[in-house]
Length: 187
Image (cartoon, rainbow, N blue to C red; front, side):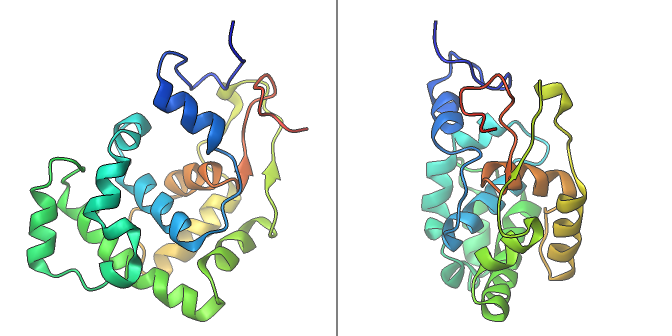
């Protein structure tokens, strides 16, 4: 018998298991990785996370390794080529949001010194550790994700609703929601 994991992780899926074991809930402080995860969480809206996870490498290639200084300059020709890229989700609104989000991201970096510093201020600069007995107890959003969503939208970001923001916060370790029966739970 293997390790006990959060109930949302299908044991038979090696990609999902590796994501849970090696990434999800671990604090991220690298601006580019934070930008990548915010974009991917937005791309996931209305879809399952595994759909995005399986396309993550395609996203990295398609979106210049999530370099916002490059993405901010995408023109109509680039956007149309992305709409034809079968390796990513080809929703035009989601693709255009990446360009808008890159521009907003760079403004936040300029204002706060880093995207990391800005984001982590919403959780008091340290992870929130929850003590959920089961995945059923985990909320879809919190007051922190609502505040982050509201501020990101005010700054020009798209696909950053409070539920997306909470998933992002969980993924980047701003919130640690490993359930108490998971081997990665930290009391």
